[in-house]
Image (tube, rainbow, N blue to C red):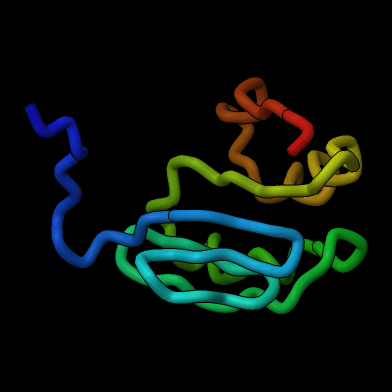
Length: 99
């Protein structure tokens, strides 16, 4: 029996990560990335520089339902940097988990 999940063509799949970057759908990315359903792009940001304007690609997309933001062990600062872009009705759904 094959239990491999069926993933539609063109979807981005996070296959692995390390302190130096990510492997997404077979491609290696050094540093931070934004992974959307249909594409992955480099994201030139660090936790200390995660200001509201850095989330412009996410906000512009408009259809992002889940934002997974790896912040290492600094989850309080991570939550604070995304708070301004979260719609009021979703603010109660933010969870922080050390990575």
